Image 1 (cartoon, one colour):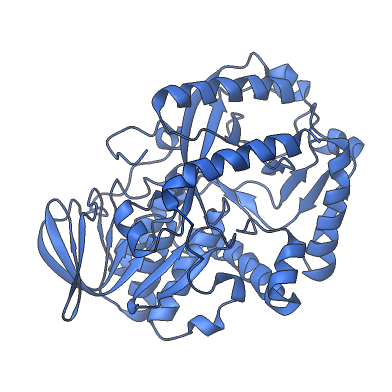
Image 2: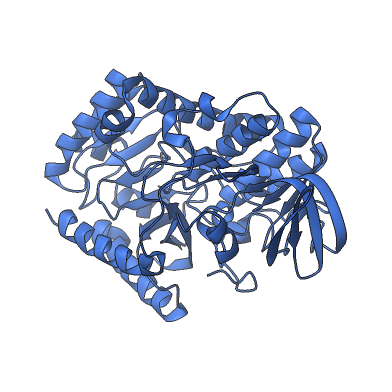
Amino acid sequence: MYDAEVPVGSFWEDEAPPLAEGVDLGPLANEMKCDVAVIGGGYTGLSAAYHLARDFGVDVCVLEAGPLGWGASGRNGGFCTLPPMGLSYGQLISRYGMDEARRFIASQVEAVDLVAGMARDNDIDIQPQGQGTLHVAHAPGRFAGLKEEAEFLGGKFGLSVSLLSREEMAETHYDSTEQFGALLNRTGFGLQPLRFARGLAAAAARAGARLYGRSEVLRWERTGDGHRLITAGGSLRAKRIIVATNGFTRPLADAKLGNRLIPVLSNIIVTRSMNIHELMAQNWRTDYPCSNTRNLLFYYRMLPDHRFLFGARGDLTGRPEDGAKMRSVMERRLGEVFPHWKDIQTTHYWRGFVCMNARLTPAIGQMPDDETVYFGLAYHGDGVSAAPWSGWTLARLIGGRISVRDLPAPFRGLPPRIPLPSLRRWYLRAALGLYHLQDKQ
């Protein structure tokens, strides 16, 4: 999963235009230096580089182990949604208080707008779809939870939401064996994620950032005046470092972060294009991105050319043979949830890492033992909007426009260490077993 030479195999790679010539300067060669070095060339790192170069005139370089946008930023489902956390809304309020919870949610509404604005301002054709997202009850008993969610989002956080009965959903959006009403949240939309990543890279390069793909950091040294990052082809000296590697964090950076991150595999299949008769067999009429109420959620959307994208969590090893099994399971489940599409061919399958932590909220800040090292990661499966916002926030922190104290409390500082981090896969195995049981209720 960490080998950049292994093809991702995503539909996005087949559909997106190539990265503009001259944007990716890598692999890094020779001895180089800059003011800020960013480890990770995805949404967080590219957004940080873009805003540092454009807004503050900072000399910034990005090092990415694979091609720019190779990690989660180029292989996710394209759901520009909120919120980036593993907490319920009630847990969020209980832990941080109403004021901080409202600031947190408001920041992520801002994050959705930031993505749309960056795409517009930089002429990035992200193929936006829908003006909102649907959270779908997968069983009759789950609709009550959507009512509670609507009370939080609409009543406490001031978002525009609507509840739709099963009949309303079937008439106006779609029907399936696991559709028992939904919550429409009018904040969010779908996009082509690799188009956004490559467009953001081009915007950062135009602003003056230097971007080096295929430049994995193999060693990290502290020097008298800063840091030295060593790759296979060269080295980069910098006064300050941003760690923006999220779920694809390598052991080197993970050790710097104290083994506080939990990578979780997420899988996606995409079908061939469907004709209007096939769409109407499930009464599919919507371009809203959808997710359901399972703990091991399904997330899905109809793409602009009428291909159906269907995603799910699962697999604990990353081995090719287990990926093949996961694809088979997902194709079977797609046919069970949408029975009229059970014989529709899937053309693509790929997977990547969602990044979680024990706190279940994102982490933005500076290392307590070295304030020249910044970090922004752990978006819990909702990084398409949260990650660019995190990068923008890191740029403002380094530029002196804000301090860590200005951030909503759920973002601040390092998450707790994971006890016995070598057992992370076993923790996940136990959690997956529990979620399977809960989803049957």
